[in-house]
Length: 341
Image 1 (cartoon, rainbow, N blue to C red):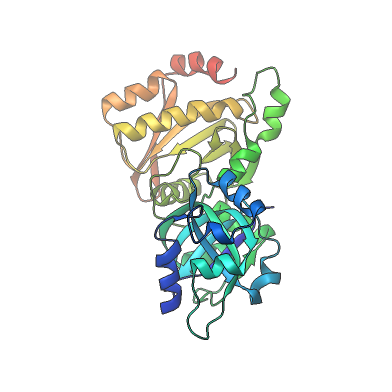
Image 2: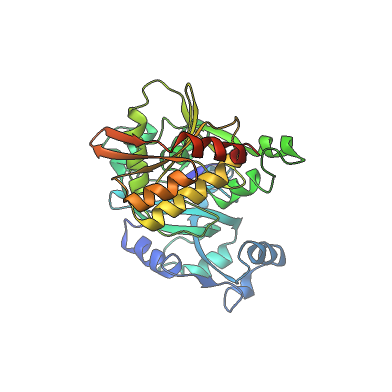
């Protein structure tokens, strides 16, 4: 189970100072004074999670010890403040150390030390209004997220699916298996996790990410949400696999795999093509059509490129209206033999 920690982190002057100290940049934890207060076990864990010897850090006071008990490596953190989620992170190592906390965040005179400390394997700035987070969670629109929340089960899943979050930890759990058709096919198939797509409601700022992790995607999410409405009651989900996490896996009369892009540029066309051809190898069922989804029509040359590999193009022609330009049947049939391997 992946937990989602909602952590107020920018509302007060002290919180903003702590943000500047340990979230605006990485901390070299193997340098003084930090190394001097790390025990050997924690030091080894940090070095394994952050081989470069540096990481961003955040934490919580002793009053939150019980609430923080279920939080572990690979869980997701939403950093909140001033009516928005300001950043999304993935926990690398979590432990308790007042000594390190005081080295990272020296308490003000008469202030309280932090107790729980956690490093961040990935950290990404966002600008998600509280209203969008509340919509995903089913909270009232004006909910202000005043204190630490640890979400589990359906609530955590709603955030992860709603924001299209894929952590490095989740990929490692799915990962490494071969594609369908290889000698250990069953192991690869077990690595595929299907997830409901109905929670894709939010708009999140898009940033460039390392290949291993995708935390936030704004324009793609908006486009997918708009396209999803056109499918009506046709089942549409996502699946995670060693290649990553798909955008949509549609199980209607035909099985379709959809990859959305935020622009109709040549680079986005090539990215969509590569991702579709990678994901399709792990499909739970043989795929009939690959679909690249764009916010506007492609150039003739880019359309021919997709069609050469048997990939249909769908673009938005008006709000809520999409036009499909299917690949030639002979191209699709030729490539389907490759997809099914």
